[in-house]
Image 1 (spheres, each protein chain N blue to C red):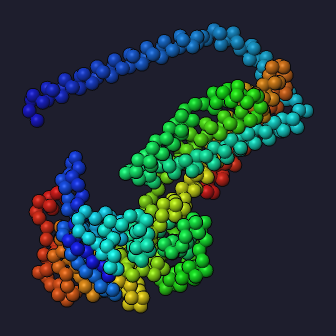
Image 2 (image 1 turned 180 degrees about the vertical axis):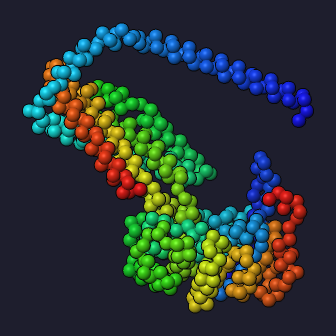
Image 3 (image 1 turned 120 degrees about the vertical axis):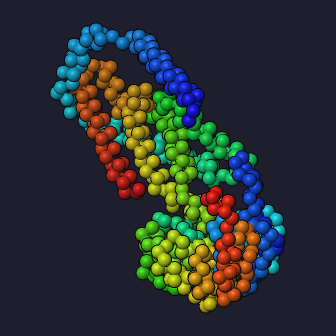
Length: 257
Length: 270
């Protein structure tokens, strides 16, 4: 359902930086229902890869195919229909802080409604019912009327998960969803993603830097190093040697950090 | 560091000090000349003291009999400020979204022209004082509250517009990204990611502007725009200082109570 063909992302040279290849010739195919963890150092191209899938990034070379459609050069208008089928979970949750949990989750339904209804804030009964359902699923039904900024970080990320699932997406892209949370909460967040992966058959692409979590939850692991895929296989194929290869760093690079 | 560079830094320090001294001399000169230009004179001030005393003693006792008339004038002044502020907010609100850098895409030329044009409107209206606008509008539509409202509204467009678009530019862009990722269009992004973030600031700036416009509306009365300033001017010209005193007391009460109310309200919204 997601297919990248010779995908490259180049950040052009500026006055004080050289041209940077964030992604280099990436070809990969992801099938419906997979739980894929993407691992690698920060700056290896994991986030860029995720953001090329829902085209929050432009693509420099190659193609991105989503559900059989080439979306490489889709305009903002055309992307609307694609993006409503792709959930995105951010490291910083990105909730609208001073509106309620319910309204935050209803934002996930925006792609399905007409612009004027959305602008007036008129959501249908079915949309509200769906939002309630998933708020309940992530265990926050008693907080439904609470303003988002009154929630803890872990609760906010669960709202963000509900916002993504209420889109009834084909895939959820999760960009380091536990990185700004207490490590204890990682299992809660990943458990929810696993649950929706299993029960709703939603494909999950998870950027993560803790290998144990990648191994524990995913059906497939992709390793990035300097914008290239250096590993693609099952969690149990990931041995000590490959991990070293994925996290290999040049000495000069380390000095530049 | 070798001795050569040391010598150079010493030289550099010296020229820096010299520059500072020269700058101080020039500034003192400017201040001195300006004092002369405004005909500042202590003897004149002392000569005027008896007149001032006459005015101050004339204020007492305040004549409360005109209080109903004063209250009517106060209502007009408040209405003047209210309508002026509302009109300016209605215009500044939509314009500020075109002026904000983070909402107009860098690549679109039309967006750039809109931004440049709205910022120009804000800058021009902001830099011309209310009194000057009032003089222009009085000569256009005659005396009365109407030119006053226009003057308040036009000047406040620039003031509010700048505050509005600057608060749009400081929003957290995380929610904007989240809205983009669910497939929202520009108007939906503004409705759900921008407005909830900026509305408390907009309301607070509106109240603050209303507070300032109350004071401006008092002064506007002096140039014939009606309200309590107009009344004050009339009684001043008739040398009826006992009435003037009750007007002054009312103005102080009005400004203080509006300040108090607006700061309370602003604390609630922020």
